[in-house]
Amino acid sequence: ETGVTQSPTHLIKTRGQQVTLRCSSQSGHNTVSWYQQALGQGPQFIFQYYREEENGRGNFPPRFSGLQFPNYSSELNVNALELDDSALYLCASSLGDSRLLYGYTFGSGTRLTVV
Amino acid sequence: TQLLEQSPQFLSIQEGENLTVYCNSSSVFSSLQWYRQEPGEGPVLLVTVVTGGEVKKLKRLTFQFGDARKDSSLHITAAQPGDTGLYLCAGVGNNDMRFGAGTRLTVKP
Image 1 (cartoon, rainbow over the protein chains, first blue to last red):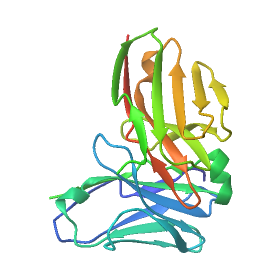
Image 2: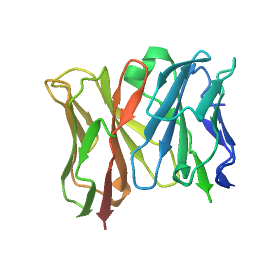
Image 3: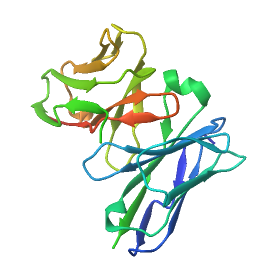
């Protein structure tokens, strides 16, 4: 199956709770990146995983953490949710350095609302 | 904080008009990519530029990469309503990719 799949598509959480978002990479891709996109903004880089190790991180606090599994699927975990965490969370996969030329394949995102 | 500055932020034009979107950075990236994003979807890659001075054409879209590999532009000729969307430039680094804030284009019939 091709393409990047994210679940759930929508989620409502209460401030202070924890959330786990999931991503299945495109077949053959070993690199996964996560982005946060607030309404009307461009995506902000959270972190990148390559072969199960975090190898790049943006300006996000430690309560944003992730995992990449041997099948290259990935999770984004956010602890102690804040109202400002409400956003579209995008997962993108790529194959190593081929991303320099062929870019990333994005999922449709998870819309998280914190109330 | 955006490492890449895009302008204009919003653009509303009539069908058939031409337009140019700009992307500027103080940093040099390994490559620069342009994506288009529609509501409820993730960004979709349009083009990658790598070499300073490079020009790529994709039907009515023309992409340029500055000689210093810090700025880029996207020119659309004879815009159509189907071109409506959020256009994002992105700089690809060693272990990340950073986006600009985007240009939201509306093409009216």
